[in-house]
Length: 120
Image 1 (spheres, rainbow, N blue to C red):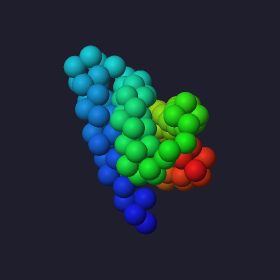
Image 2 (spheres, rainbow, N blue to C red):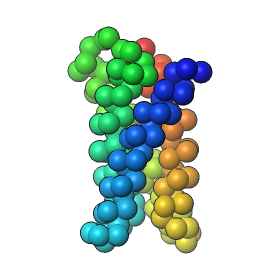
Image 3 (tube, helix red, strand yellow):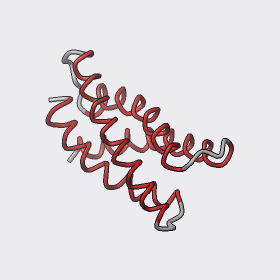
Image 4 (cartoon, one colour):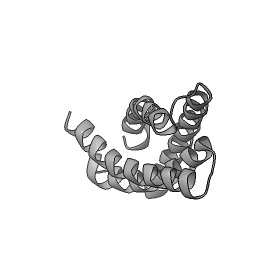
């Protein structure tokens, strides 16, 4: 349970980065929401990796191996999230609500795989 709470805390910081970039790209640069979601997710993933490596999982294994594994899962999660946002916006859901839905769904998936594969 402690790991899950730490994961959620690190995720909150990474999600803040993700959402700030999402909003900036949509509102200021006029990107499509699904594209901005992917960009925000990629940048937020870097915050998440560092926090999860040192704080959540206290991982002391190979930096290159855990980084590559994390990036694979982050990319998979980003693509999944982009798909959820694209579909939800197509169904006329406000893009921030669509992103919130995507965040919740993807978090459970990535926590499980990061715990058992990336940072084992």
